[in-house]
Length: 124
View 1 (cartoon, rainbow, N blue to C red):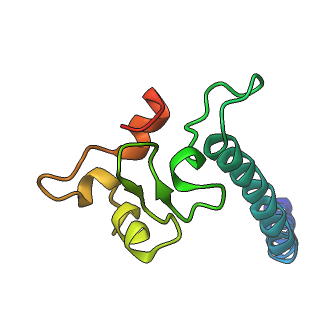
View 2: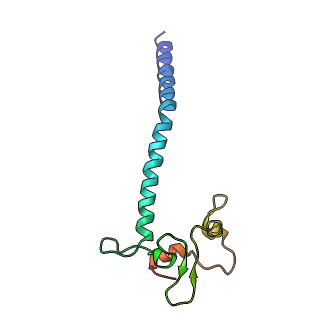
View 3: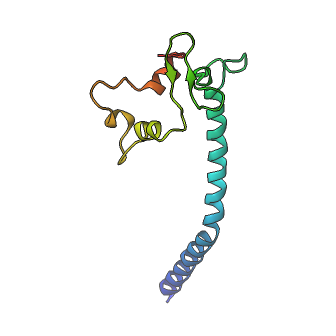
């Protein structure tokens, strides 16, 4: 009799916990999404912006791609930096089917540009 009672109590406790989790999970997930989004935006601003005394490890993407990321001339090289808002850049850099950028590169493509810029800085 005691084992049956213990079993019923445990099953009831697990059921209540599961119901409580289901009710509170959407709010928890939304809060976590907002927190991660804020962190990613802050990181993106830090990496995209120019070198400052407080931030000397930036990739300084804005130097070539412009303050709003729409592209522009790359110094006096005669080359144009692409618009970072374009679908072609998105298609080239996105990971497909769980792969990574290196999995979708074609022969002759440059190495992982963003990784090299972050590691070594400047125009690669």
